Structures are given as structure tokens and as C-alpha cells.
Image: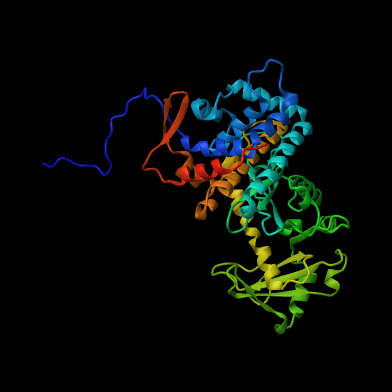
Amino acid sequence: MKKRIGSYPRARVEGGGRAVVSQAGGVLLVETVRKVGLDTAMSAALTPWRRARAVHDPGKVLLDVALAVALGGDCLADVAVLRAEPAVFGPVASDPTVSRLVDTLAASGEKALRAVRAARAEVRSHVWRLADRKAPDAGGTVTVDLDGVLVIAHSDKEDAAPTWKRTYGHHPLMGFVDHGSGGTGEPVAALLRPGNAGSNTATDHITVTQLALAHMPKEYRRGRQTLIRTESAGGTHDFVAWLAQRGRWLSYSVGMVITEAIHQHVLKVPASAWTPAVEACGEIRDGAWVAELTGDVLGGWPQGMRLIVRKERPHPGAQLRLTDADGMRLTCFATNTPGRPIAALELRHRLRARAEDRIRAARATGLRNLPLHRTAQNRIWLEIVQIALDLLAWMPMLALTGKARCWEPRRLRLRLFTAAGQLVTTGRRRILRLARHWPGHITAALDRLTQLPDPG
């Protein structure tokens, strides 16, 4: 009888190994924090909350939690992953210390949130300068996408409420800077709202836009070089009027609901006025056309607004809506960008779909649920999630090349952060040696980070 041979080799497993470091690839995030100066900025921002004779710096405690979230954690206690590797992450506070800090910051309300946001904004300007041609403002413009996120609550938490999708939880509104096709994106605003918050609430959109602009370098806080892009939830009179207000002069591209008036104007558009839509590669989009609506349909809207409608053959199996016409799916958006072909403007607005990728990354990075009970605590958690997402955007932008720059958090964790290493002490130096057979992205990325100038 033949002895059965399995598909995988068998190895004897024993405990008590020494000088072995798990999550050694997390050194990429640690080096990113050091090179961009996020540790010193956070430490300075949270100095007012440091108690006398405190052992742990509040800035590092908050950063440690953010690093744990970036590595895949989804609660405060997951900072234990860092605590187990002091050679890579340094001394890490205990769980009670972390909880007390979050409670202290939550009790301070907006004061603590403003301090954390100011530190992030300061570092963001520095990161974009370091990234140079890879920065999201390399073309002289910045695009901010606003979108809502439904966060399910599995217990009765403060401000949790039924959502419009018949679930139960919260409905944060977030803003992301779009890095374009060559990168990912980074969060610049997050407003925690109850689950029953309206999707098209103009005051919330204005608040999130203000938070996003405060995170920008000063030259992008007003002016046409900053584009605010939203789905139809942002297509309200108050929000569009605020964006176009004199002295603010922001560019916008906001989706619009197909009203009866718009529907009637679409039916009157002659066949010669429809222009073929285009793809990102420049080719004509099959079965899609765009046209610009003029006349009294623009009454009551800010001066200079352009209303562009697209009609497209529905995908197989898709059901038409009452607002569709002649077997075509209709969508509409408004913009104040002059002098550009409507096909190019429609393509630019359609690329807002990249915000869905940012939301998916946020869900995979601590936003699948809000782990704390009180709303004030979860606001701090939302800032921690944003710091983690910042690091997951800044590290690839500064250290990775090619397709690796577009890797989402799950792939970064699988291919980079989970790498194991061996800690070797020689003389007075400690060296972290990675496995030779592991993909070479880590060492190459570390070399690029090393070549960046130190902060200050």
C-alpha cells in the first residue's frame, strides 16, 4: 500500500522562537510616519492632553491605534499586535491607557478634533511636496469626491438609527482626494451622522466641504483649481449656490435628479445635438451620448451653471426608470467649468465612481463598524480611521511604483505588511532581515523612503 503524500509539506511547529518579528512589513508604515513627520506633528498637537509624568505620549498612542487599523485591526484592543513587536513599533500603551485617552479626547469635543485635523493638514502639505509629480495636485488641480457611507450597527449605539436601505446604524458623509488613475486616494473629511440623516442635506455637504478645504494646502482652499464632485445627493440649490459664491469660486461637478422639467427638455433635444460619449482611453463609448440643456431649465440656479445630460443603452437585464426615455437610461449633472467639450466633462464626472473604491477601502480599514458606544468616542475613531487611510495612501505614493501604487488595503496587507522578519543585533545596531524569497517590493520601497529628506 502506497503511503499518501499530501499537497503541502508538513512542518513541526514549536513555540519559544526568538528574534522573529511578525508584521515586519509594517516597518513601511513606520518609516512613512517618520519621514513625513506625522509623529512629531501629532505629538505637538496633542500636548495639551498629556498629563504630568505620563509615560506614553498621546500623539504616539493615537498613531499606534491608527497603525493597528492600517494593518487590519478594527477595535482599540487590536493595538496588541503592535505591542507584541516593540523592536518595530516601540513601546505601546496598555489597553486601559488607550481607552482613557480616547475618552479624554472625546470629552474635549471639537477642540481635540481640530487639533488632530490641523496636524494632518500640516503633514499633508509636506507629503504632497515630497511626492512632487506623483502628488494629486501635480496637474495644478485637486478633485475632492463627497459620498456617504452606511455603517451597520449590531448593537444599540448612540445616534444609531434606521437607514434608507432598511438597515440600522450610522450614515457618515466623507470626502476623498482623488489621486487619479495612477494612485488611490486619501480622506480629507468625515462627518459622523445618525443612520436616518438625509442623503441630500445641503448643510452637511457644506460642512464636509469646509472640512475638506481646511485639509488642503492654502492655494487650494478657494479657486477654480479645486473641483468638488458629488453624486445627485449634492445637487441641491443651497449647496451649488454655496460652491459658486463670489470669493469662493470653487469648481463643481454635481449629479442632478432627473426632474419632470429636465425630462421634458431632454425629449426636445434634436438628434443632431447629441455628441458621442468617450472612454478614459479616448475612444468613443459604445451606445452613449451626451447633450447640454439650456433655457428656462436653468432658472433659479447660479449663473454660469451648465446642465449636461447623458443617455445610454441600459445594460442587459437592467430595468428602466420612469425618468428614462425611448429605451435609454438618462443621467444628468451640473458643472460650472467653461470652455471644455461636454464629452470630456461627462467623462470627468463619471470618474467620480472611483469614490466607491475609496469607500470600499475605508470599510476594510476600520469602518465596517463603529466599535465604541458614544458618538463623541466614535468621532475620535473616525479620525483614527482617516489617519490609517492617510498612511495607506501616502506610503504607496512615496514608496511604490507601477501597479503597486494602486493596491488596496487588503492587498497591501497580504503582500507587504504580513511579511515576517528576523531581528539581528550586531554591535549597537539592530537589523531587521526579511525573508529572501519574499517579493522585493518591501526593500525597494524602503530604499525610496530612505532617500527622502528627514522632516525639519
